[in-house]
Amino acid sequence: MKASILYGNEDLRYEECETPKVEPGTVRVRIEITGICGSDVPRVLKNGAHFYPIILGHEFSGVIDEIGEGVSRLAVGDHVVGIPLMPCGHCEDCMQGNYSLCKNYDFVGSRRNGSYAEYIVLPEENVYKVDKSIPFEQAAMFEPATIAMHAIKLLDFKPGKTVAILGSGTIGLFTLQLVRLLGASKVVAFSRSEKKLNLAKTIGADESYSTMKEDFILNAKAANDNKGFDYVFETAGSTDTMKYAFELVGNKGKVCLVGTPTSNLEFTPKLWENLNRKEFVLTGSWMSYSSPYPGSEWKDVEHYFATGELKYYPEVVDKVFDLEDAMEAFKMYKEGNVHGKVLLKCHKQE
Image: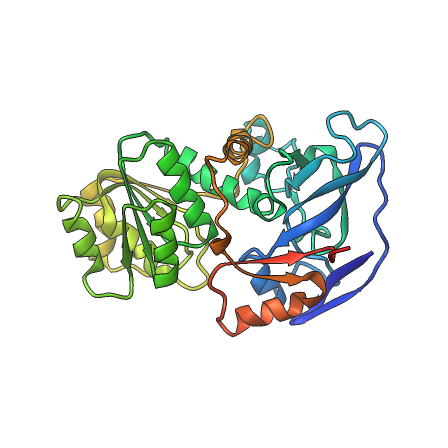
């Protein structure tokens, strides 16, 4: 098969390699579409991989083309997506159903070969069947959607409340759709990008504010009866937006930090004191798993995808590359020219 294999910093090569073979309890998936996750970018551009050579990628959709002995839940021809986390199942966190917190985990596309390839073989429990009506492009974003759902569940979200979403990337936009489906009374989007803010309004945001404009926090609060928001989701991983969350949340509100910062985060005493004076709840969110594995997050997203309530907007996708041009896709990231989701097509049109 062909795969894009990472050999070192900015050294991603499209070449022939051995097609993986099924073993008992595993299935082989012909990968149709795989997405570039933000976590893949430093692995390619900043010597961030655990080892070399490696095939990256963990957000993918495809079709099962072979099953191993003992596989009972899946069949050849099923449309599927990958469940990239492989928890150990034996540590204290796993025994409590907190699989995202497993310290002995394996992970597709970072600790083992992933989906920047024509085929992948995985254990049956790491492959999730989806409705064939769901386009491969949308299904490839299944895992990011579960991350949004996990964050919402962590805050014990209740309907009839106001929501601020910092960041209008893939996860931010899925969070927007999901809180709207779950009964938010008002959803407000915040982003540096006017293009993304326009898309957020199309998807269902009641209001949108550019974080590049002066007094955007004051203006957003003024439009919300000069109160903070009941729920704030930070999805950008920016040190600035993490600070904005402390200002936007209301008294007794809840903040979830979904994005991962890449630089030092410093607070002034006054800004940090918001946590005390507002008595808001602050939590982080890591991946998207709960008990029974992989969790209700995955069932909920599959349901909303299948019913069409969680919609696919082609505008979310910035560009689609053939797998052989994966390095060209990462050059876009290096140049700062990415304004949405980037997908890789793993099989050329026959």
